[in-house]
Image (tube, rainbow, N blue to C red; front, side, top):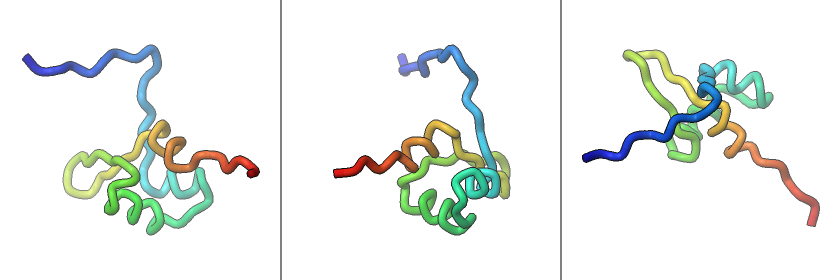
Length: 67
């Protein structure tokens, strides 16, 4: 028996690399590098389509608290 993902109340929103870069005002290369080094999970659909979730982006770009 394998573990099944828990259902959520809200759908997961996926963004393209370009959309994610525009949302956080960073380059597309920055997003690609975070995917390659494993700090930003991504999913692939076909050969060229790569998407990241908004939740994973929020975890990557967390607020800085003053010390």
